[in-house]
Length: 391
Image (cartoon, rainbow, N blue to C red; front, top):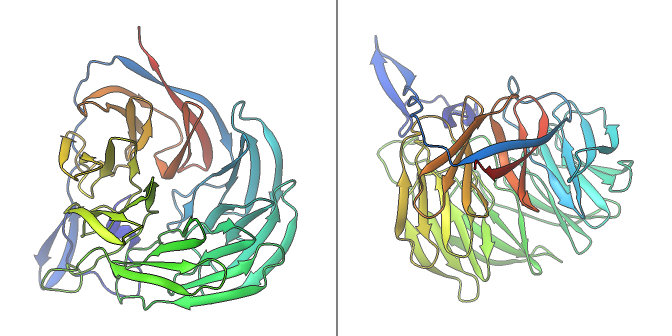
């Protein structure tokens, strides 16, 4: 998805950088998208296999941006659709365990706790559903629209609203336990960084380029630090936004920012280990060796996890509106605007497999589990994908 389509409608866009160019005609500004690269022929050594597909409900192709991602617990996937359906699906077979209609639009999902599922609505409501059968347990009205999937841990449901509030609710009945707030800039990408629970703290990224950690039990802010700096001559060029979930490997947190950088943060010392100037608004991934990033121009980059140095770059997919990379065994998988799934070799970034899957591009971060990746697509399908040797 083009990042321009994710701008909040509260400000008129006058200029953009990266994947679109601005042309001035008759005193008016016009945004022209760069033409996607044509796909080059590859020597395929692996094949992309769709193991199964399950239709959750209406897709997001014609909808305002929604951050609907699946959740996982004990071999069961949980997924939601914009038209209000929530389903539990067996991760291995793709068979449905149950399906409910919440009868409300869903814009942020799915958060998975020990015994509760969490979904948010455009009207600022958060619903707690039974993990066993999808029965509604409680509903709580918050301050504004919910775009980020909530999180749940230790009896606390953490919910982020688009107006900069972060709420801690009781997982059992939705009663508010705490709240804190950070100012939202006048211009942001449409979307919010989902809260990440680390030990007994919750970490949240904001559109100001700041990362905030709060105590999970009472919402007390533990630390608040800038991990990305704005630059540029106008408001759009200075727009900076942490819009995807930070990734934790060991005691190091990796976070990306639009028109900012990819940063490695040591949680123990709260110090920046390294920072690499790369602009990205889609999820990043990491393994023991590297951090993998799709930048906003469509380049896939592998960074050394310890130093931040570039290991390799794959630039043949420019302007193809790539998903965030998914790390799977020896491979990195990305999806593009036409629904192609590309397999990159981790050692050097070469594209060694490709398949066009029906249902449109994959949306949101993927879940990697037992040799497969699981992701929603534009048509509202939850799909299971694996990679096999072609020989």
